[in-house]
Image (tube, rainbow, N blue to C red; front, side, top):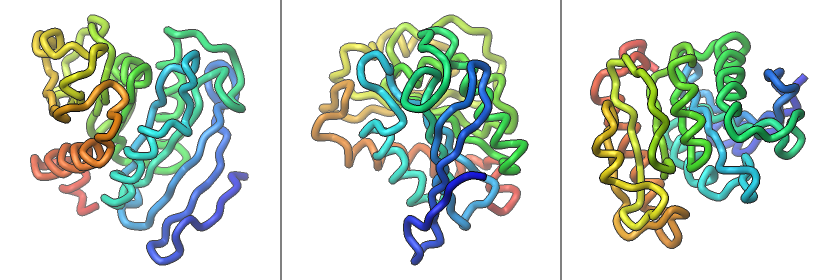
Length: 223
């Protein structure tokens, strides 16, 4: 059974420590649950574990603040070989972990809409995983290292990219040549959004609110 505790009783938000079966063993995670939008979940993917990345990454803290402020349930997890997750770091196969988490959200949490959000390495893996996430509502890539891998993408929605204009790892000219990508800039920000986390949080909120205004499935279902 997941271990859970209330994070904020005034807003009916509580956290669950979870362990989810993945392709390389169990994956450690946390689920931040709110009663506001029961069927909408944000799935957060962390940066490179070989450089200290984990589900406790500071940028993911910023992302979660944004999604929780919007009343969206939020799940973080550690890729294989990171933290208490089983397996060994691959560098190329972690996208399969994301697909497993997405399947768990649909089967065990009745997720009708999943917003896939990855930062840095997590963005690269989210890019590879998104077409296999059932009930995916949107994909948001934060500071994805370029170039993005060449994938055949036939989705109707555009992938939303949030990048600092001073990020040396996310080259805007290469992104502009990538089909089905829409870029939002955080001016003056580097790859780590040093001193720009408030602007990043607002950019995430703006992107998600724009998606709802464009007529998302969640909106049409009254969530």
